[in-house]
Length: 483
Ligand code: 4AD
Ligand code: MG
Image 1 (tube, rainbow, N blue to C red):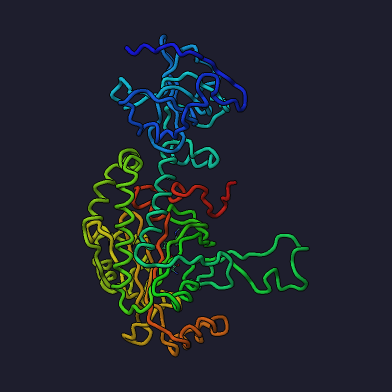
Image 2 (image 1 turned 30 degrees about the vertical axis):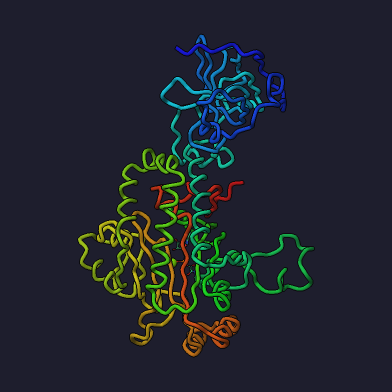
């Protein structure tokens, strides 16, 4: 049995902000929990200071055990203290600063532990009122009600670390493959997707509006639904560009894969005239990012594989080691027509693929992601390139469908031929609005293509998370904008 050595100074301070200093606070090195856990203590004890939130308290006759977490790792640091430290102020959820000696742990559960000499409670936490209870499983629907506190839960804290690592891996992927990052605007005067799912932006206060009825910007302005058109501009001066930022859709949907505010990763590549060129980049982006996550945050990923979505690890391995499948929209409709399932929505050539269709197609292909290419002309926005395989029959557009989610990426070759684009815009009555877009085809036009990936759907898919609201810090959707 481990018998704690009595510390020279053993004090508990409940003042709002008093640091360890009586014993050796000044000499102690401040470490994050992750750094403390990774410290080599074989060459003797090390005086350290850590700060974080108490995840558990276990009091025995001879010793007090605390687990302290500061968000730097899934694993908490075990604090071993003299029972004199016991106090009602040190409870689940309270914030503390602990100084003491980092040493090898006699237990097999962890390599190191911190023998506390001073424990300072920085902020108390009333366990009766705190919405989370120690060692209790709270379902995601419950946790979601507390967006201001849910980063204290292991699962959400792991999610946020994975999200951060994925952001960095995506930037690395593009930067190391010669793409230039473009900050496309959040406020824009165009509707890239033409689906009318726009949020309008206007000054809230009357006296901030300029004279007249023209509104703050003088033209109707909206939150962007996609950075594509601005990226297309930049692809007129660079071969490869990308953007990664928030996008907004006023979709009246509470579904488990739609948000009103979500992050999109978009790329545009000049001098490309085959869908294969972007499909390869999409597959590489997916696989390189996922491989980076598996190697940089294995503990966080494992938490999801073990507790959130059992079986997810092998599902993901299958996706990683197989080439993604390619089929045409026409083939997809043939498969759906022969399906022994009855779908809620129509499955005729010309109909949009709904989630139920997308999921069926992926299952049909052995749960490997499927690129569906060459969609009917009328199903895709004005910018998609006409395949000219019949009068306005199909366009060179591609969606990547993945298991359990459906559409993860959407992309296309862009219509770079001035006269074809002009007549499509004429028919849609958009010629005036898109003069600048036509200019891009007038002045040194090149064949180009691009795609967008929903970042939250990516996280949902990789981690096996059922609801998109649980992979973003502050979800916004119809009738909900907490905080
Ligand atoms: O298919 P979408 O609408 O494509 C575009 O916006 C193109 N302009 C992108 C481009 O080519 N640069 O959206 C791209 C992806 C979808 O495949 C989906 O993963 C995600 O964005 N997405 C959403 N994610 C969460 N909530 C929503 N409401 C989403 N709408 C689209
Ligand atoms: Mg789409």
